[in-house]
Length: 331
Image (cartoon, rainbow, N blue to C red; front, side):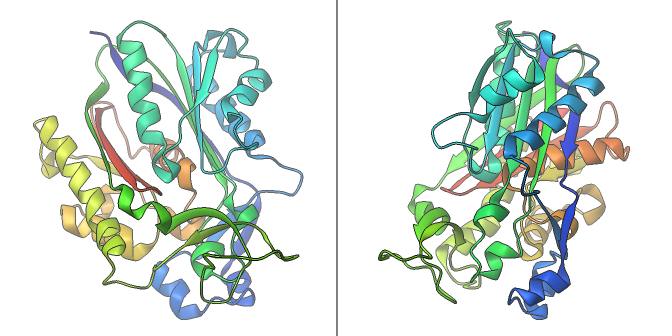
């Protein structure tokens, strides 16, 4: 069976930054900011769209891969919130980059969307259905950040990432794992509501403030079942994927994970026994970029020479709904 490896990566981050001063003006406390470890994030320009960001990241990935848009057989995109409801971002990307002969569809696993995207692409390539596949992930959740909830307006940030996968003789996916716990479906997402300081309204009435808002519940309730799940689920899926590949934690050269807040990511590393230097962490400067996180972090780590040929790279993601997943690959 043909192996499928990563042959190009790319990322795009908006120029506008929001920093601690901006977060404080919006009502966040310095104590929370310090605890979460998110000190700035990027914000998409008013005249920018989420597909603008994905197109820019895609062009960089294609250039790095040394192929043109006409070589792409398939585009798979994942975004926390698509540009249009019910319409895949991948179709717009296909048109705008000039990938005239490629098919296109979207995959949704919220912040963890990169995981199923890569798994699906690897299967298509291994089965010789497609040769080159472009994957993208994006986030523009600042557009619907809840102004009454620091867990929303501080933590989330905008950006996009991309990678190109193709046949490889030596690199490729060694194993993967995906797990789901649907009982936490209502914990996090986007709902039409009226913002209310300190809480998310489950029932709402017509109001001039009523609109779509991104929300996170019980983020400070450490004893809640969902928080325990958020902390334990990523280590669990990484261990399962490593076991499937007959590898151990000691075999990992670098962990590229979804970036959330310091208490979560820090606990994932602690529970796995992975030192900070073996993980590429970006939440302090980009915040949680949802579906873009893994792609952007993979690109940045590669550009910084943190990933070398032959390395064992573990990708791990966690998405609202709730699902988690991980991939073990040889670079």
